[in-house]
Length: 70
Image (tube, rainbow, N blue to C red; front, side, top):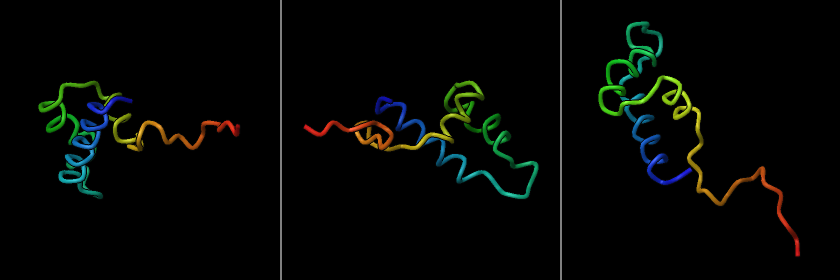
């Protein structure tokens, strides 16, 4: 994942953290996407959920990747 996508993902997560209120159905994550995120960063709802799910680790540190011991 390139750095621009990582940065945008962090910004989207911060917008959700600032505006989402647990327990209130009128301030759910979908509301945040439709009224705040989509107006600032045009993206599909699927991309929005992927950004919330992604783990922003450095590109080279994938713990699932096998290591070669030479």
